[in-house]
Amino acid sequence: MRREDPVTIREAVRGDAPLLARLIDIAGEGIPSWLWQRNAGPGETPLHYGTIRAARDEGAFSWRNCLVGMAGLRPVAMMLGSLVTEPDEEEIAALPALPEPIRPLVELEHEAVGSYYVNALAVWPGFRDRGIGSRLLAAAEARGRALGAQRISIQVFSQNTHALRLYERAGYRVAGRRPILLHPCQPWYDEDVLLLLKDAG
Image (cartoon, rainbow, N blue to C red; front, side, top):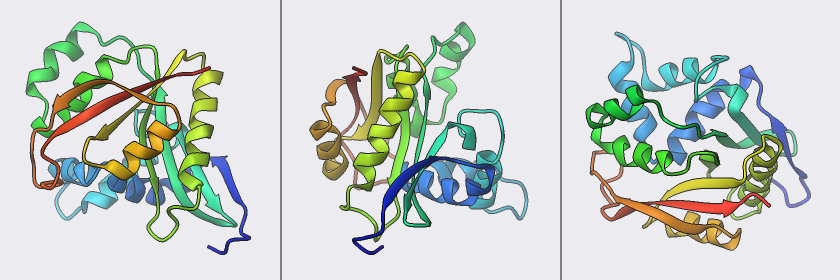
């Protein structure tokens, strides 16, 4: 990316699915591919499984719920977000059976009912620290407001200080936390996952 390349944000299209799968795995610190591996069919790679999921029209991880950050004509970033609805009895009852690494994340999501949840935000390596993440976050907040959300929510590992600083500069504040349940994806994180909230304005 050259400094003069314009940064723009657009709605994702189905053809972005391979990029979305790669970037959500970066945003999730490897948790997505770890989960995809558990569900992939014989001979199917985790990334292929994730790409198929991103190409769906329905579901939380769908291209329809994503924005893409562009550096000139090149897609280099993504945001996945959706409104958090009240969990039903079945979802609450299923919490103890969830894979341990994602259980704290789902518990915190349930604490942000009514918010627009920025589930994932990632910028491709080599294109960071150039304002793309901030632009994408602002676009996510605008989408949340357009959907009628009163608050915007984000989760971040407490030791991911770079991302935490970005969110705090944007006005987010810690509203909840859960201890991390360790797994092979991010052994360097052993403290908490944080729920951050901000008034939609």
